Length: 110
Length: 118
Figure 1: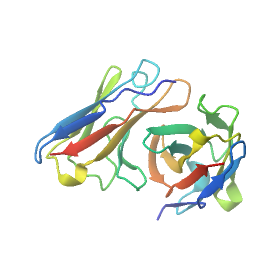
Figure 2: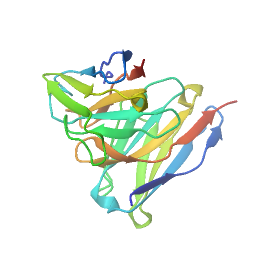
Figure 3: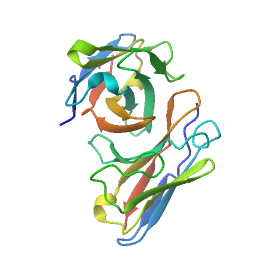
């Protein structure tokens, strides 16, 4: 199972909106609405910020939103803040009943 | 509250095996699958496998097939990950994570650093 494809890095100024894409195949992202997004800060465990394409767990800022079209999912961060600087990973459930993660995206707040 | 507490750091020689535990508390252990992942230094997050904590059946990533074994002890609400035939590329932080539904991992252990060194 190949990793889902994400841009290596995305940057934006405080207050701006950015989007991170996550491209898979008809066997994963395109097969189900089971795409999740995680935020990783150095030295800390990953944090779930979006599940099932667009659901935000309790306590996650509404500046984070998710969507999907075909085999590509997207995470949008609105009103970018310094604390959003982190690595972001998407993941998808697959037709083989496994999970596959993305290549990861480093978000920089300019 | 939900807590996943993992065992401590390990140093292993090439060819050895490592077994990490993940003690769960604060929820019904057998109602939610447990996944295992790792992140090597400077590398991406990598999924290793998952275990149905109720039935005990497992599914592994092809990248680890034959080397990883996931088990659980329901009475101890603890999940275990055993990785054999270690090589230097297995040096990584290993995580357990509780699933919600089909793939969202809502609670994570603190991570266990495994260092493979001769």
